[in-house]
Length: 196
Image 1 (tube, one colour):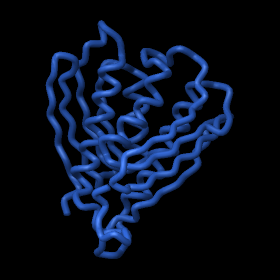
Image 2: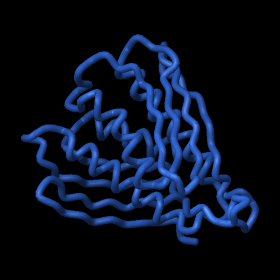
Image 3: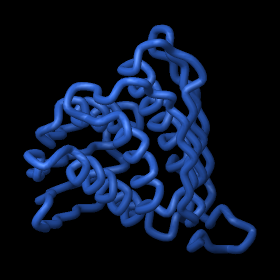
Image 4: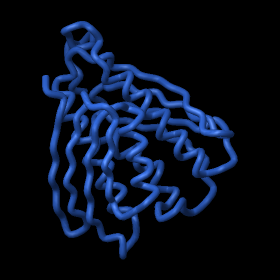
């Protein structure tokens, strides 16, 4: 299995070029025009230990929503494609990640069933150029397009930048564990499929 995917998609709202290699080393080259979004997605690649190249030209003159959502959806789509029938993966992953005073927990099931529960407790309106409501939306959009169950909670923390980044790092670590080779050449489900 190659565990790679490339996506190109252009609409009136965004123009995205993405390549993903799940057997990479954690290189992230992310250019969305939104600094904090770049920061979060680069952190995702780094700590999940996959290589991600993502370039997006979005209608940021409107706001950040379309760019954030479409980038997350394309990452999820690429994950789904790169995992194929999900044969030989661990399937489940869980992790805690601190960032100074903030502590986050993430649990992932590469189940074929899209679901996300996200509780970040962010209080600011924006972090840099990214609306805080769109931070949670990133996780939900990735989960939906990747057909994956995701639970992300920030357990404590005063600084919203720290809370958001700790959440992304925990998610990345859990995802890394879930997509790792299990050592078995089977689909990790009693149903014999992870198609939902």
